[in-house]
Length: 59
Image 1 (tube, one colour):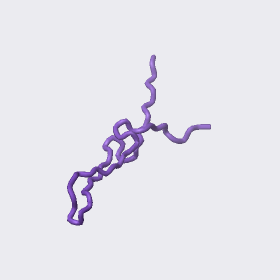
Image 2 (tube, rainbow, N blue to C red):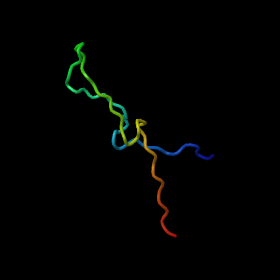
Image 3 (spheres, rainbow, N blue to C red):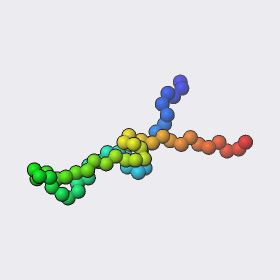
Image 4 (spheres, rainbow, N blue to C red):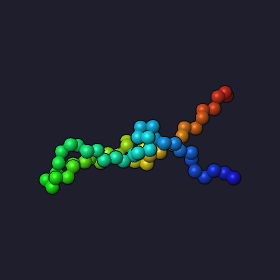
């Protein structure tokens, strides 16, 4: 049976955590911690990158 999906692997840059919230250490006017949401640029927020197909050796 043919495989319909391309094989994927976990992103090496974000290790599968593509979107994170980072605390800046500052406080908002209400007293809550100010956070910045960051998305991984390598996988564009999916957490997965396509596997490279093996190169054919020979002719």
